[in-house]
Length: 115
Image (cartoon, rainbow, N blue to C red):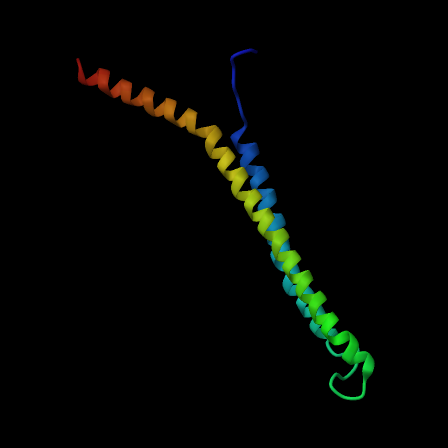
């Protein structure tokens, strides 16, 4: 079917909704991770005293926690950008159709005024 163009706008929008659900799960992931980490805070020992192990790993544990949090935020941000891109794609696909309908309607109203 050369010269024909078609797209399923509803399928594109549905895909965007699936991505938005993934973002929502990502948004829930970080608080769950932080709550889980809080449950284990200090298990490595008491820092600042004579516990060499706790002094050695405390900073590492906090750094890894920050790294995981920033990674989750980056992944969630990437998904949000993808959701926005898919929604914009649906708009770009639908825009010519809307413009054509608007043009037809304006032509119809102009020809009705000429009579």
